[in-house]
Length: 267
Image 1 (cartoon, helix red, strand yellow):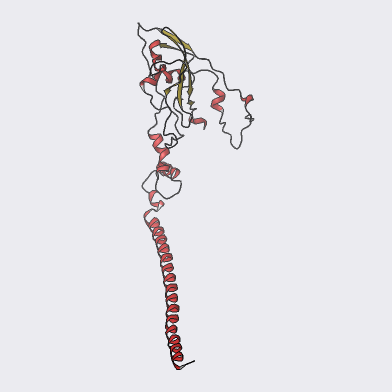
Image 2 (image 1 turned 180 degrees about the vertical axis):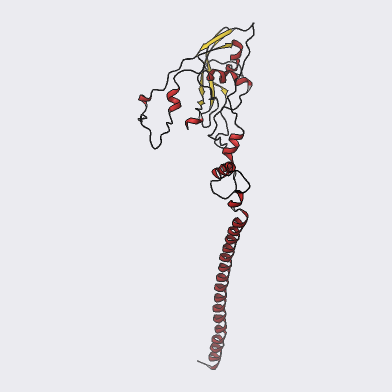
């Protein structure tokens, strides 16, 4: 090995040492930054939690509410404040909104009958629910003394056995398009947003119906005072089909998908 080779090797050894030292220093510095950044995040979370706890303690002290509000209001508020954060979210406010906008009595729709109208008298027949045909034995009450089926047991006859109508009241059964024998059509179309819109369950009185749907509400009211011609879940609506026609007479077959709401005192 010549002198030139020795000099070159010494220079390479000397130049590699600072690089290794610099690499070790950079790795050590990076680890320090990571540790410091982690400590800052943990400290921020702890500080935020402590501030919120102090804020809730000093600002939302429940004992201060007792001095200014009646016990009935406090009970109602805490009943709906399910997460006990002293705020009502939209989900928590929904039952209250349903009660505020709810009618207290069913609407009694009247369709006048003129002297020139053709009178039609309809008799309602109703077969009570036969509990012996059900798969479960409901003779015994489970977990509570409240009988959830009391209203069904008491429902043994039509609400209105007989009711008079005018022939023109039934025009809502006719299709809006030209009549086609055997072609089904909607009378009350189902909600296309049924999988998006949420309808609350705590509804005991039917919503107002449009003028063209009054005949359906009156017919169903013969069986029960609270018919819902539009249900919460699919299938929804009412469909019909003209099976036969003879002059001005039509044979219309229709099917309702409806529900009746029992009194809330049974729930």
